[in-house]
Figure (cartoon, rainbow, N blue to C red):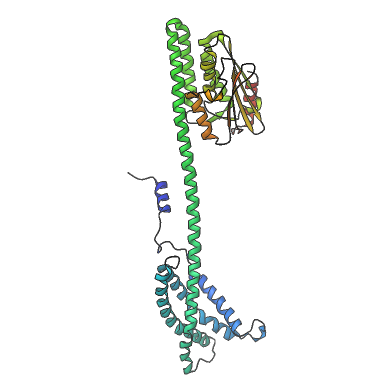
Length: 400
């Protein structure tokens, strides 16, 4: 069975590479050649004090002096590989520094005759007199210069490798942050789905229980309620994959539910909607209103002998969407600490905590007119729809 390519690539990216493999792309030989030509030219100008006296420039000497540094094009590439093989850094200085020192001796002994030979070759090509035989002894005097250039190359390699590793660490940190955010989003979404899976069966069982109670006393109403329940379940199941949908969709879903309950209570239940036209396409957590309305019916109106009225109001205040469900039922205990949240309200509060942490309010109030109100405030967000659909939906809600 083949593995997921994305998962495989991510595992390779996150795997800690050994030091020999975790190395940058060092400069090419062409770039190193240009660098040493520049270094050789500047060194000639400085050593002959020509920077302040340009008229003293001897082109032949200048080119020959540059030629003296050309062997370091290849020697630098070798030095870079040595630093990668014996990298310097925390916990490695005492181990690898002596090894690099031994390497520097070999490089210095090799670089001296190469530098003098390259210098001599340039003089030959420019048809200038070569050194006298005693000049060959100067290779001993070039060893300290070779040693200096070796450690300059080591420092450059250390800088390139450290810079590369810092970039790698930043990339890995960004990748880990992204994966952490994705994991938190997935966990939150999974938690929301668990809460909804608890909520939907709760609503379904209550509806079926109500229908079963009517089957003996009013079979016709029970049959009509089953039809309504089927329509409502189809609407709910179509939106199971969405954490949010529009106010228009939520209101339509709630209308189906209240129509189902009105068939059971008859004239004892009246539901009034007040939906602002400018919030028709604002986003709401899916299946938010139904448990609030059910709570008003079950805990507010069932024990009341008067005509039960439920007011559903949704409007906007600045950057907030206000959702209120009020009823004239028996109300709540005067002590707020005695209010017990059932499965419907408890799951609703948990969903809001997950979806809008520290960005929402959930309040239950009892007015002097004995009206109980559940008021929810969440951030105002608009669904991405075209203007024609938005205008049509707003017109439909305004004329309900």
